[in-house]
Amino acid sequence: MASDGSPSGCCAAPRPLRSAQAVDVASASNFRAFKMLHLHLDLRAEFGPPGPGPGSRNLSGTAVLELRCLVPEGAAELRLDSHPCLEVTAAALRRQAPGSEEQPAEPVPFRTQPFSHYGQALCVALPQPCPAGERFQVLLTYRVGEGPGVCWLAPEQTAGKKKPFVYTQGQAVLNRAFFPCFDTPAVKYTYSALIEVPDGFTAVMSANTWEKRGPNKFFFQMCQPIPSYLIALAIGDLVSAEVGPRSRVWAEPCLINNAKEEYNGVIEDFLATGEKLFGPYVWGRYDLLFMPPSFPFGGMENPCLTFVTPCLLAGDRSLADVIIHEISHSWFGNLVTNANWGEFWLNEGFTMYAQRRISTVLFGSAYTCLEAATGRALLRQHMDLTGEENPLNKLRVKIEPGVDPDDTYNETPYEKGFCFVSYLAHLVGDQDQFDNFLKAYVNEFKFQSILAEDFLEFYLEYFPELRKTRVDTIPGFEFDRWLNTPGWPPYLPDLSPGDSLMKPADELAQLWVARELDMKAIEAVTISTWKTYQLVYFLDKILQKSPLPPGETKVHPPAVPCDDGGQRGGPEPGQGDLHGHRPPAPQQRCQLRPADRGPQGQLGAHGHASASSGYRSQIPVLRSNS
Image 1: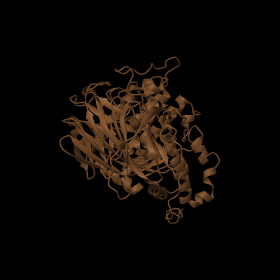
Image 2: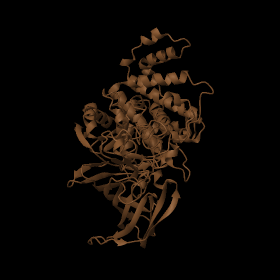
Image 3: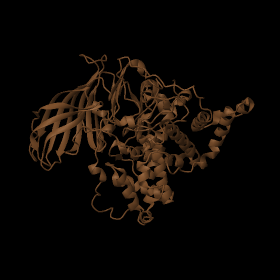
Image 4: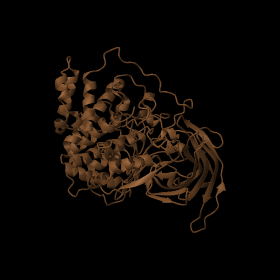
């Protein structure tokens, strides 16, 4: 439809973005007043006992923020997102005139200001208002121990049981509890870090380059701009193994051989297919870090280094394709990002679509449709549980001030978002043309944060014939309805190519829910040859066909309290790529409180969700020890 494969005027000046004025009510910062250019962290990790006292486990050091003032009349205060668990002890300002030598930093006043239950503002006074365009550095000395963004594990919680472990989890608004920052997806910047660790430990981060400096220090650099939530750190007893020309696996020594055998050679196939469909993979390396078994998520799409549950070490490569979702975030979410968390579907709906495009190329449409059917079942279960008219069942969610974006997390941005992207492909009518559009979309908005309007305007520019026919206002399928009306998707992609894999599971489910069990017929079915998603689909059908009778459901008690009297040792439930995990069958029909979806309320030892970030893996429940 677009004769030259691109919208008219694409070589002109950069398009103005609707997102440039977007509000993020989840940030306490004045991020519109400054351009964040670079962050440098210089931190030392200490593994001690839990608690606030001397010698307790903590990260301590400095954060150096390089900024440029954007306010025409100048700015007298810098407000950053922070958290009560961050103990800031000093702030300093370094100004540098063009062409002059670097000046010493001068101490400046700072204070904290209440914001919400999930954070506070750190207000740094600028003694003389910074004029527009001036570059300067703010140096913050701080310490963080126990908190929601930095997760400490005792040796007993690791696979090797010998050494402690610490990791950070940023999505959605948790990295303000790791370092002071503009904790909003609207702001992207480069970063570097120097991390000092105790003897016998290794540090890894979501960065392009990794360099060991001496026996106990590691230097990292991320050359591409990313939002704060994608900066991630892990420290533990870690080793690595190469599994491809640009990929390695990281894990504890007792897991590394299994990780190498499971993923050797397959990651490159996923990356290469993604590049053919969506354009260059810009991040350099793509590594996997297999987390300790107590990691409460399926995966988190930190650029260059995806954090994943060890549940994916199935032993037969049957779960390797779960990584495709995280890889797809390399284009959708990490490269083109939602400008605020109310637009989360821009990250996840596109990533689900991209995952299924890669899956179709590599494994065929039957397999992909089978997997998509399990996703549709998750969406159906979610809407049955919450009610279709629940305002959280919109693609664009209105997040009120004071509401933690994690509390709005559900299946809708993933599966309803996938349906909307599929509908837009259906309007185009040609898969190759839509693939080319997605490649152009990524290229147009790479390293930027956008709103739905930015995307949809580009879509209609790219396909001018669709604009002429007013496809955005087709009754019942209006783009505004897709974005702002709760409920079931008005369009569902055709999944009939998966019938050859779904039919046997349907038939076996019917045998199991019959009034009288035909055990001979049941035992004649050989499920050992089934694909993993056939088992998931079969279990979904059992749940749908045999709900618990009235009176057999109950409200779960509150989540099990932590040993420290209530402070969770890890991120709060439902984060990140942190897609909702499939609970065990008896719980599926019960009334779940939001708190019960956390690691202690659900699956205990193994991951219950995919961090995007990243993948809301339905699979690991079949493999977990819970």
